[in-house]
Image (cartoon, rainbow, N blue to C red; front, side, top):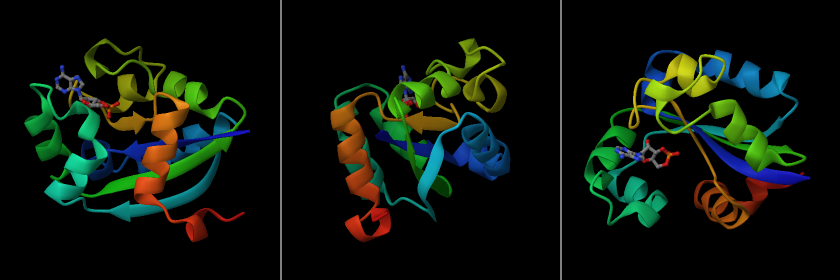
Length: 138
Ligand code: CMP
């Protein structure tokens, strides 16, 4: 059993795709074990994406992630990290197949509807950044 961190980003949240995305998660067999809506401050968004701080797109990414509310989730299941990434599809929504969430609900490489952890260590950091131990106790 593995846990991963998932976000419905401001573009998909504002468009009202939360229900469709959560349904897709549940239909895939992954379990939503924690969930909250929040509006990130600039400081919080920068902390979340600190590994990208030196990238040229960092400023735009932080601006996008703070433009409106997001839905943060912890997903659980066997091989959850890879299964959630497969469900999302490639980072660039413009090139994502229409069978994937980013292909359906995203627009381009920045406004790509969803986020998912890419490895066990980033999942642990990202889950801990958004959720307390009490919120994850099962
Ligand atoms: P995400 O999976 O949340 O991880 C980092 C995010 O940075 C990524 O999705 C994109 O939204 C964004 N990103 C990655 N590469 C680029 C890029 N070349 N230009 C703009 N945004 C990018």
